Length: 264
Ligand code: F6R
Image (cartoon, rainbow, N blue to C red; front, side):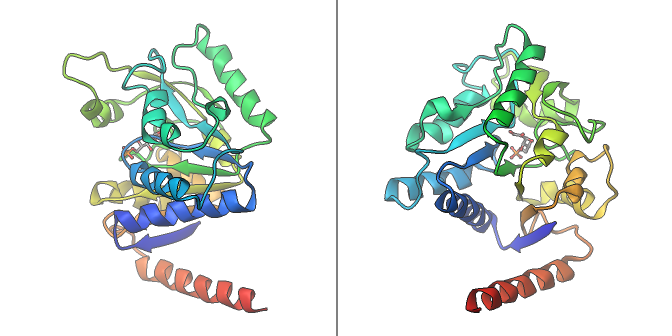
């Protein structure tokens, strides 16, 4: 894992935006894996700003979102399709037909999960997958005890996740307890993954992901198996890491290596 520790959430968002900007510059037809939640919002705002300034284009890109609530259609304000339209797609030059979010209103959700996997394969897989992390270590809606090689499927949310996400729902509003989520195996198939985490409330999960054992009890620890996982943290999210100085040292050396390679 490449562990990047930055001062604050703004720097984390800019770093993440750079990764997507560079990816699209290298390959305008890239396949991007996207996430919802609070963490990526600042990154999406930065991508919108760059797109409107003409420094990045999504016109040939395809996207696949990690997850969706089962039982909500894309017009529901709490659905992740609605979130993506509002937070990103409506403001950039992407062709909406090239954007994919698991269908929360599928008549046959089990079949819909298989179709979602097939669509990702037909697009030749995901180039860069964006992730956040739950306080219980979940990625996508892969809650603790999720199979480490799992594929897109219907998943029950833990009470912790339901409580964490209750802030998005009105008190008397129906809040789904089920989701469709890419599996951990699906996420690990992405050629690169970029996980962003900000704030001290993520510090325990970040510590377990990076320094704990590989275990289904912390689904994000599966990223230890990925050949190109970039973990981008602010100081709060990094605050419980034991080897923080070592990670900063590796990053400094990595910068020097990049400069050396560029000079050859
Ligand atoms: C969202 C998702 C979730 C979130 C995680 C963190 O698509 O898959 O795993 O990334 O729950 O959420 P925030 O960013 O709201 O703390």
